[in-house]
Structures are given as structure tokens and as C-alpha cells.
Amino acid sequence: MTSIHVNELTKDYGATRAVDHLTFRVRPGRVTGFLGPNGAGKSTTMRLVLGLDRPTSGTATIGGQPYTALKDPLRRVGALLDPQAAHGARTARNHLLALAASNGIGGDRVEDVLEEAGLGQVAGRRIKTFSLGMRQRLGIAAAMLGDPEVVMLDEPSNGLDPEGIVWIRELMKRLAREGRTVLVSSHLMNETSSFADHLIVLGQGRLLVDLPMQEFLDSRGRPRVRLRTSEPTRLGEVLSRQGYRAVEGEDGRWTVEGVKAGTIGAVAADESIPLLELIDEQVTLEQAYLDLTAGAAEFASAGPSTVIRQVA
Image (cartoon, rainbow, N blue to C red; front, top):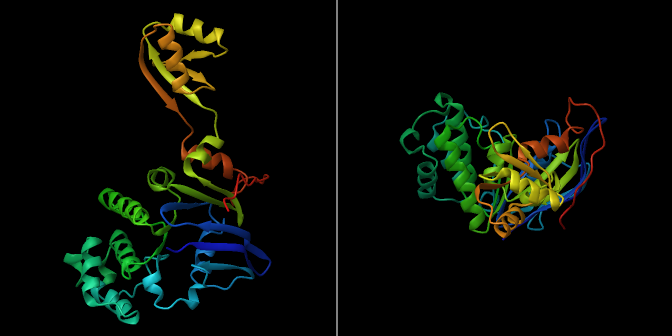
């Protein structure tokens, strides 16, 4: 299968540096979430990978080749950057047929992706009559037209209804299970946390994070346990002797910082203290992301940014 490899990629627009010596690899078999504040360089990077703009320096390759050198590129790479790009006077079917003809793809495949995207019944309508969500589905259908090894999607959930969000989420996960390379840019943290296995985060054109999702979350917060017990006083005394402090919340649940649920469970079992609830709590992706990018957002106060780890 095929990886996306970005190496020392830099893009200047006059005096503005949009992308600053980026190096990362998007590997097959997982969904990689591509995150960053507005102006972080995500869209510019995706355009550079797809040959829609030229880098000032550095390289962006797909399977070791620039996109512009790929034969039958739609069969290698499927991308959605702008759902409004399709000509409004065309029907959905004719739009896809034109793309298919340019890449030697048969008409049967057009019908397949129309059905998969939920557009089979409206394929004869002009695109200018489509809602944003329908245009989004059409863009995803176009990206899937060549059954590509690499899929790049920019805000794929934008405009979709709840059913559509579930559909695109499951589609991305299925593509990764099939061994394809999937790169997804999004501002929706809760949605990203539901499908991404790996995260690449940019800030002010620079790499901030290149980590598996769980490692990133673990790196941004201490472990914490929430619990309920019918013997809180005794459990509190036992935990205190071992250096832990349990704090009661208004809902009757207790929180213990700096420990995992397995440890608390073992302590309670040794002392025969019943636990009615025991849950590991961790920082959410939204909390971790906001903490990381607080100094890298376009309209936030400036601050230092740190690369957590870059995966080779």
C-alpha cells in the first residue's frame, strides 16, 4: 500500500510562511486525524501533497512519487478539499461520469459510488439544487470513484446530518481496515476522537504532534479515577495510607488523582471494600487539543510550542 511522505515541506506566500519545514508520514492501515487552528497550514499542506500548489522547498510524495507524476491519479488518490468545486449546472451523475472518463473508469463504478453515498435517487438532479450535505456526499463519492489506495478528506462531516456523520465515520474506519491510507482534516474534536487512530497536529505551520491518539491523550493529562463506594470513609483512610487522596464530588462520586482504576480496584479488593462504580477518566481530545494549541492559534496570545514526538 501507499504512504504520504512530507519532508521538510515549506510554503511561503510573500512574507507569510504558511508551512514551515514540515516532516511527517501518513501510513496505511489507520485513520490519521489532521488537526490545527485556522491558519495552521493544514489546507495548504493538503494542496501541496495533491500538486495544487508548489512548495517553496521540501517535498510531498505519495508512494515515493509526486502526485503530478502518478499514472491514473484518481485510482491512486481520492481527495475532497472543496465540496463546492463541482459545476452546478451538471447533474451528479454527469459530474462523476466526466471524472470517470478522464481516468479510464467505467460507468458501473459511478453508479456504485452514487449508491454508497446515498445519492442514487437524486443522481439526475443538477448540483446547484443540492444542499451542502448533498454536495459533501457527492465530493466523497468522487473521492472514492477510483477505489483509491490513499484518501484525503478536508472536513468531511461538514453539512452532514447525523446519519451522514455515522456513514462517513464508518467509511473511513473501513478504508483503514482494508489497509488504505486515510488522512482527515477536521475541526470537530469529538468526531475526530471517534474515528482517528493517529494524530498529526499543526500550529503556525509547524508540527506540534505526531502520535497515536491514546499516547497523545496520555501525554496531556494525569490519570484519574472516579468511583462510588458504600464505605467511603474506610476507603479514604486506606487510600490515604498509600499516598492517595480521594475527593468527594457533589454527586456523591469520589475522584482520585494520579492513579489508574486497576490500582484502586486491587486496593479495595484487598480490604474487602465494595465498589459500586470504578471508572478511569482521561482528558478529552478537545481539552488536550486546546491546551496544546493555546499558543498556536491565529487569534490567541502567542506562546511557545513544543513537538511532543515525531514518528519516523
